[in-house]
Every structure is written in C-alpha cells, then in structure tokens.
Amino acid sequence: MQQVEALGNGTCSTIISVQEIVRSDAENVPERYIRNPDDRPKSSEISLVPDDHLPVIDFSLLAHSFCFMTKSKLVRGSSCMHCMQIINHGAEEALPKVKAAAAQIFDLPLSEKKKYAMPPDYFEGYGQDDKAEDRKRDWIDLLWLLTMPPHSRNTKYWPLTLPGFGEAVEEYATEMQRVTYEILGNFCPRW
Image (cartoon, rainbow, N blue to C red; front, top):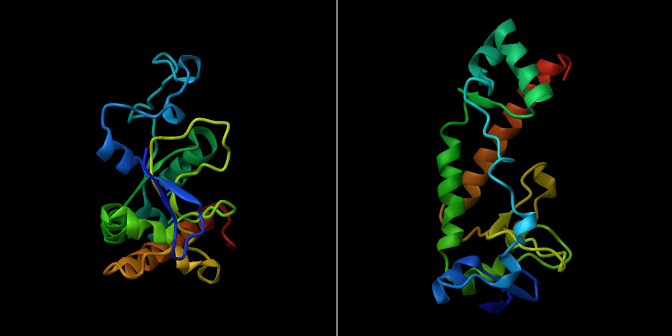
C-alpha cells in the first residue's frame, strides 16, 4: 500500500490513495477496506426508488410562477422521500465545468495531490476520511472543499494552479446557493 508523506499546504502525515493502491496492486484489496460479511448490505435490504415514486421537480416552474403541483412535489420530496430530482434549475452549464475541474485533481501525480492533503484535525483537502482508525474505509479518494459562504473558504486546499478550477468551483457554488435559496423561498416565502 502506497503511503506518501504530505508536504506543501496540507499537513496530513500520510496520504493513502485508492488510485495508487490500484496502480500498484490491482488484485489485492487492503484489509482496511474490506467490510465484514455481517456489515455488508444484503441485496434484500437494498431498495431502489422506482422512477415513478421519485419526485421530479421542474425548477423553472417554481422559479417563475406559482405552480401548486410542482410545489406539492417539492414538499413531498423533502418531507416524505427525503430525496428528489430537480431539473431545469439553471445550473446545467456549471455542473459539467465543476465536474471536469474536480476530475483534474485526481489526474495529478500523487506528489502534486499531497500539496492539498487533508490534515488530521480538519475535513478539507485531498485524501480520505480516516479520522477514526477503528472503522473500515470507503474505497474512495476525496476532495473536500468548503465553498459557501465565501469568507469561510480555505483556499490552501484548493488546487488553484489547475486551469479554470477556481472559476468553475465559484460558478457552481454560486449557482447552488441560488438554487438553495429558491428552494427555501418556496418553503418560507419570506426567505
């Protein structure tokens, strides 16, 4: 398993990268990622919500007019299902940009990624959520960034040297804040 000392902006003692584990030995999964059979979900416990039960909310109807059916779907999605799909929210252009920008960091060599390492006492940065040593890890590398409110951003964990990264995250965060406020405004008209 490849562990690399973190340098640069990050202060994490080591980064264990799932990508590097796979590159070095794709046949063997380290024990820290293998869940006990009793802790694994059983196929009978996995429930996929059929598309006809998942509320699909056309956000353009909420944003530009009062539409009772759309508003009732929003209420049902948040209170009953705790899940919904929002379409036509106006952030369609920002989403692929931020996905492409975030993907850039995962294409960097590990020596570059370690510059943005998650410190052991903080949640932002690149790495894994391995704060609790006594539990199994998810098979994932993370890039956690606080984007809103802007004054709370800790950009030392942001790979701002990547072309377009900062701009894409800024545009996406701004759009998500707008969508959030509009959703809240439909629950609380004075929001």
